[in-house]
Image (cartoon, rainbow, N blue to C red):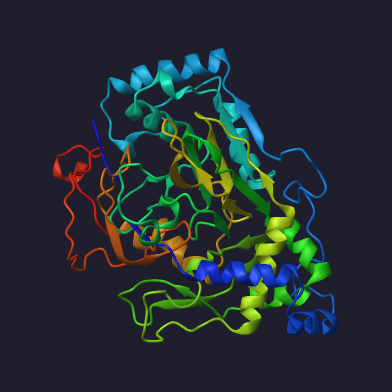
Amino acid sequence: MTAHTAPAPLASGGLENLQHLVHRQEHKLAADILARQQSTTPQPPRGWPAHIDGPRNWSRSTSNQSPAHITTLYGFGNAEVQAAMKRLGELELDGDEVTRERFLLPKLQSRLEKCAFDVHYGSGLCIIRGLNNEDYTVEDSTVIFLALASYVGDQRGLQNSKGDMLSHVTESKSWTVPRGRRHGIHTNDSLPFHNDMGCEILSMQVRDQADTGGHTCVASIAAIYNDLVQSNPWALHVLAEHNWPIQSSSRKDPPFVLSPLLEFHAGNLLVSMDPARIGPHPLSHDNSIPSLTPEQEEALAILQSAAEKHQIQLETQPGDIVFINNLGLLHAREAYSDSATSSRHLVRLWLRNTELGWAIPPSMKMPWDAAFGDRAAKVLNRYYPIVPMPEYMECKYSNGTAAFVADDDSSSDDSNGREVISSTTGGDPWHQLEGNG
């Protein structure tokens, strides 16, 4: 049984500019930044805390230990998973029907619920370890991923307007489209610090690792905030302003919304930031999306530098399932190389926990709504592609470091065409014949 992922957006040329800005900030070559630092007063935005403490305030600079909570499935855990798989297999369910109620794990349940709590109110990181991919078919492995993840988040997010619930973060050896014309997650390039805008819990199943490099790095926004309160408080004010142009859709007028990148809301500090979705789209030539101001460019570079300072590297292995608080942490990826026998491959799932989830501020609702809200609810067909597409299909407009622009109008004409089989038409929801976006 095979299936293919939906196509991905183009990588943004703006990432090179961001790297240049980070380099400039690190070496203190910009006189205007130095002048701003010297003239500012060390005060965070009004109503924001002077310091954030607690389990999410962790940093490489203060500890060499990983903050990730690791739940290992020993013998009894794997036995429970296998027994639940046997019961579920007899029901022949589609992806949406794989839930914790149908995948009962009486002994593991408390551990998985502890994982959900740690993601929201602990360090923000949890890893489930002990599953061996070689023990299961690709389809069964996907079912187990969905089932275990349902204990951490009971709602799944839409990853694009075509209805895909899973994305494959990999670079297939069969693809011939040049890397510069692919989405960033479908190359072996490094990715800057960002989060998947609109997602609450970023969940990733590790199917395979790179031969060299490719580590996922994470940084706590709490540690970054505490640093910037002392070193660059003016940057916090810029990041908190509701004037950042966030690309929303190629078919909307205007094709952007104005939002902050940081927001302190309902007692939590939230970050919503993908450098490749901020400012003009690289294919836009009509000035329909405003360019960033010099202050915004500087603040974005400072945020990247602070994330690099406080980052920790996740040491994962095939079979791991990783859960990241996508509102409280930023993540990045190292460049990597695959060998003839290896191929770095993560399967990505977006989740929210309707009981533990953080309140979403109105200023950050646009991408969230496309993944979990009313706009997502309008997409009726849901697909769970279990393997990458054999031939890479380029996207016409969408952009982003990691997240698709899920706000595009899925009912509009698609000149490239898209043929799928879904559960709503009596077909197999795991099987996607051909995808384009």
